[in-house]
Amino acid sequence: MDASAPAAVASTASVGMVALWICAAYLVATLVMGILPGLRVSKSVAGYVAADRSMSFLVLYFVLGASVFSSFAFLGGPGWAYSRGTAALYILGYGAVGMVPFYFFGPRARRLGQRHGFVTQAELLSYRFQSPALSVLLAALSVIVFVPYLTIQMKGAGYILSTITEGRISPALGAGVTYAVVMIYVLFSGVLGVGWTNTFQGLFMMIIAWFLGLYLPNHLYGGVGEMFRQLQASDHAAKLVAPGLLPDGSPWAWAGFSSAVLVSAFGFSMWPHLFMKAYAAKSDRALRRTVVMYPTFQIFLVPILLIGFAGILAFPGVEPADTILPFVLTRTDLSPVLVGLVCAGTLAASMSSGDSILHSAASIGVRDGIAGIRRSPLPDGAEQLMIRVLVVVLSLVAYYYAVFSEASIVGLLLASYGGVAQIFPLMFAAFYWPRANGQGAMAGLLAGVGVNTFFLRLPELKPVADLHEGIYGLVVNVVVLVLVSLATPPQDEARVRDFVST
Amino acid sequence: MKLGIEFFPPDTPPEARRRRKSFLVVWLLVGAMVVWPLFPWLGARQTLVFGLPASIAWVALALLIQFVALLWLYLGEEDRAETTGEHELQHGSVAAEEG
Image (tube, rainbow over all chains, first blue to last red; front, side):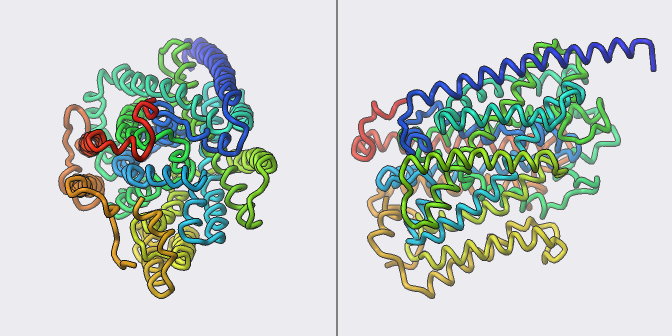
């Protein structure tokens, strides 16, 4: 060890302490911003779940943008770029096309929601297909895919606080404190709390992403172009060849990359927490504008990925790769205040997705799951209480997995996408295929989810090994939906027209 | 009851149908740009474009095309809605929608 090492360690520790204080201040600010909107929204379930259908373009833009800027993007994206190179481009690829269906589905869902009082995705589909069982099935599917998604966000928060304090705060404690804050404002304010904190967090993250993505390559290599030239001339050149590498360092097959893009693109607008925001929108115009502007959020992922590429030559061997961003931060000569702000921005990425997921998962679990089993609506007060209880329960379940699961951040999300993508054929059929009926929808969804889960558990049985299991699920889902619908009586014409002609 | 897919409500004017169909073609093209075979064929060269690996520049281009196409679709539909007064009919006053 050289003579300057103790001084460097001490300096890293002090940077960590300053960053930690800034993160703490940020958590307090978020808590206040999250609680305040709850004072002005109505106390009804529509207020708690759909913000009394009052969200403007600006808030919607940031709420939907937050689904891009999650721990998955802020930590998983650089993590993949660092360890698997251009494989990380699949995130940009599916984002380029994945939100577009919402331009068409969203306004229709909003109008139907206003007409019939829907606040969840399952309410819409179960009404169209006249199937309360479908509502329960969708609720179960949603909650199951939400848990890993929420786990990802908690893991991210834990990584940040643990890395900047060099392990003095454990990942478990970091995730616990951060999500205690999230839980409080979600319990108190519902979706409006989520909306306003996401706006604050979104602005913060945009600035941080561009700053860091351009600063690090410049600081470490003298520029973005120079960074890639050095990478091309190094042993890591294979990371720049699309579609990148697998976790073991071998090249990723185009079948694997392309199917990951397709499954994620189909699943993107079907995430129930994202879809539900159609009901919170003030107008069709606000919703459409949000989708139009969405690529402006997506393009922010480019500098985020540059952070990961910047770490390859400068900081080899960082494990787990998902911690590369906070690791790099603590080893550059950025001012401690800036490091703190970047860490707070990364916490924002985790929290802005986690709060929305938590709120949606609990709302869906109660409104579609429990109420669906009862076959009659719960009293408003009881429903709100049960949603809040479920917020706590789901937080604890995800926290358990965040602390004990070893899976990578991107890997966890990719597995969830296979399940959520199975909702796409039903949604498309609900709006555009009058002949689709409840039996077909139910059979298609069960078959799609079943096949996806089967190949997820037993990947060695896949006919084409590299294809994402969700592709098999989607093919079977569509075939079964069509065949069963055609073999069974059509749905009530008036109800179908309500959807197809709206 | 029809067996086919109905992309448009019956009262959608021909011009609006054409615009949406054109947009869907661009959307499919952008989708094709980010998967096999277009991506490996055109976008996965081992060169740098504006200092970025060609593959990153290619995906960023796909994103840009998608943004422009969405903007074109939206502005065209807004123009039509303003002309026909669709906003007022379907969703209350335009002023109430601003936000």
